Image (tube, rainbow, N blue to C red; front, side, top):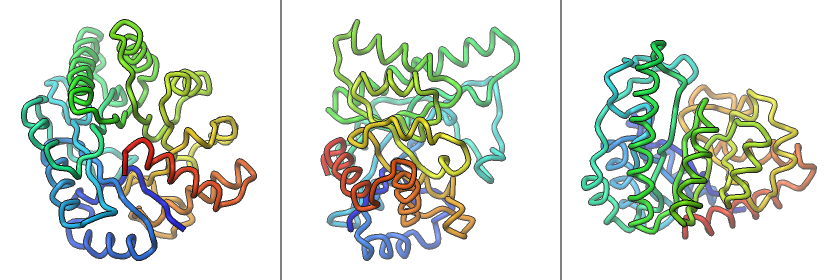
Length: 279
């Protein structure tokens, strides 16, 4: 039975020694993978990995808000995601557009807003938010130029992201396509994303937060499954590092919550991924 992990990071250091083995095991189990870029280097690495495979392994390009140079906060580690070092940079549209010439690039992302780490001074906080919003707008423009869907990251910033997306769609008369990765918002926010035509990405976070009521309401036709490997490992995996194959536990959990067969979740979410990313 085919599955697609729509959000993994085998391009990260956690997999530098064995990503080939992880991919081989995944492909043998009829699992395809989208490797997601978070800055220039990881975007480039995702492409380099994907280009070694004729099919089944894909890449995305983008500058994650955590990696955006801002001058206000210095990130060293994220206690929720293990050892994490932010490699900051300014967004360079030309460099990312050049990366997108590869046929393996299927989306722009992950990009978005992240106010989890924020300066306490109000003036600095506003400057941080404005810088993130500017980089997001530039990357949305890039996605439109490339005719690619977008993978959105959003943490403690759903109202600002919704405002930007509504402005893009209504004022700019633009029909954006994409997914809200690792959705953890409220049902009202989920509804607004769904009304705009976006997919919602579900991963191992659903084992940590009680999102059952929201998951029950999300139409299957608007769900994508993902791992966010090497992070957010489902407890059922019995491992510390998350891997693409563990997306099956996310599918199992969604099936339990919705009261439908595993096979139905697998089939529909795979079709959703194929439709959005054209794979």
